[in-house]
Length: 124
Image (tube, rainbow, N blue to C red; front, side, top):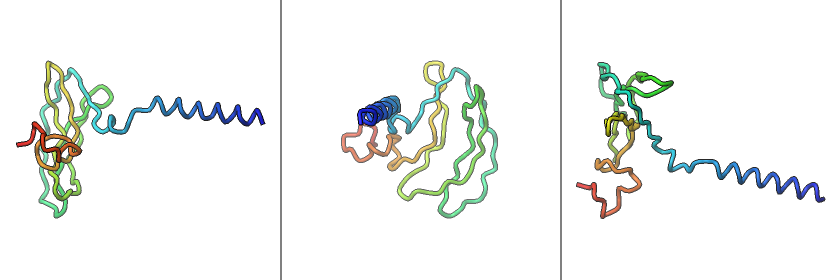
C-alpha cells in the first residue's frame, strides 16, 4: 500500500511540474518573430478571380530556418463581421518584426477580445 501511495505522489508531482513548464495558450496566440534581416520585396502574385465566401490571403515571407521563405497566397474562408489583416513585416528600432495574419472585428487593429471595450484608446 505504501508503494502505491508513493507511486501516485511521484506521478502527481511529475504532472504538476510538466504543467508548470508549459506556456499559457493566450501567450501562444501571436508568437513574435523579431530579426535584424530585412525581408526581400514581396513577389508579384496573380490574384485569381473572387470566390464567394472566401478572402484572398496574399503571399508573404516568413522567417524559417534562419532565412526568409516565400509562402504563396491562397483563399481563406471568410468570417462574417470580420476583416482579414494579412501578415506583415514592420521595422522597429532597426529590427524587423513579423505579425501573423489575423481577423479583426472592427478594423481598429486591436485584438478581438478587446474590441467591445468602450474605453478603447485605439477605436476611431
